[in-house]
Amino acid sequence: MNRNYKSIGSRELTERDYVILYCLGFFILAIIYGQLSEGTFNDDDIGYYFRSAAAFEKPSLILSPRGPLFTLIYILPAQLGFSGMELMTALLSTITIFVTWKTAKLLNLAQHKMVLIFLSFQPLFFVLSFSAEREPFCALLIILGIFYYSRQKFLISALAFSLLPLVRMELTILSGLWFLILIYRIRDIKIFIIFILPALLCQIAGWANYGNILWLYENISNTNMNLFYQFADFWHWPTMFIFIIGPVVFSFMIITLVNDLYHKNIDILWVIFITTFLLYTFLSIVPIGGPATNLRHLVVISPVVTLLSLKGFNIWSTSKKNIVDFRLNMFSLIFVTAISLLFLSYKMWGHLFLSTEIEYSKFLIISLLLGIYYFKSFLSTENYSRLKLNVVLPILVSGLTVFYTISTEPPLKLSDEHTTTKRIGDWFISSEYKENLIYTNHSWIYYFIGQNPFDKDVYPVLTQELIITSPKGTIMIWEPHYGPRLRGNVPYEALIENENVEGIGTLYSPDSSFMTAVFIKK
Image 1 (cartoon, rainbow, N blue to C red):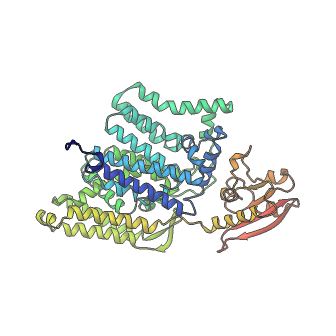
Image 2 (image 1 turned 180 degrees about the horizontal axis):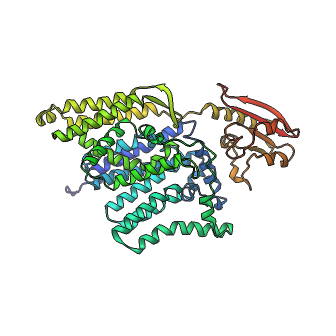
Image 3 (image 1 turned 120 degrees about the horizontal axis):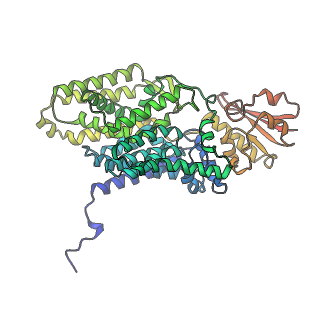
């Protein structure tokens, strides 16, 4: 037997091995949370699932302004049901974590393993990791673009950013900025071709399928979403951002920001962050298309935020002493502590807005970071080493990061609205009307009755015209969320005052905040 032979199974684990094991653990955790969740992040999850599932038989559904590339890569997972969508997103999120670690290592950032915790347990990134939303895919494309840019593989970087508009259309702005950065850097015609090709292929496919040479332009310009949802003010994103990334990551990011401003060191990570943040701030207050107020939108830059926060953590945890840096960091932490107490000591309502319910967990966590940093300033380098703070601080910070997210983001439950739609769905499939044609504007009702509206020749939207033209025996289910606005624009009175429509019954949520009404065409 050759004694010099060393089997693969007996070799020592490398950092890469441990990172892969961590990523595998996160993947499993995301799947578990997905299976434990009765609800979804929001109703869009169900709509994206329906579209992707139906696109297997109707490929034309891929050609949607709401993410043709997203629909394309989710077609096969969607055939496994909604769990397949969750599985695919968990995989994309896990790859994003791994690539972010590789990027931090490539950039020679100290303590680069901390990005694993800082990214995977950002509250909104964590929640979306078992969703059917588009933002995790965008986050992966962005960090891939940064990674390959850092490796000076500019064509691959260009490809990653060129695909962003095919997942979220408004990110055309960020994609265009990246094009300018790359074309300035290498002045290669191939960069232009790479950026224009995805949109060109999409336009050709739309023209071929619909016979409209202006298909892409019309789908971009005629979104007609500005009356669908409320717009926000300028302070929406600044006040809600801490809920997206969590208090620990937020604090370290502010430390990085203050230090980089003082030292005039605004790098490409800040360029991406500032561009995206301002883009969504602009879209949330200006009526161009649909308002971008949903907190999930900024998850696209979660990997960028992670890298910026890692820099702040390294500044915060270092044993080196510098009076100027100490004052900058104390100012940063005192500032974050103050605003968390005075303006952000509230719980979040439905991943949408601040509630009126008080909670001080963010303030207490940031105060602890402030106290540790102040205490650490009194320690000599020898005492810093003797207390093993280079080990203790990463463990403590990791614990705080995980604790906040796990405590504030449990598995998603069905809201009172969705519980009511489930009861309606259960009633319908056990009723004498289960074979009747049904129209409703709430995707969850279709989900609970086991029908994919995209499978039909025309998406079944309950409209005032349909009330008149629908055949006898048609079931119409009205609810106040999507019924009187959005898809159908049907007021309740249009049904109860129509002599050709008969009411079957109404069902209220337990708190009476949501009602569904069932009608049948006579």
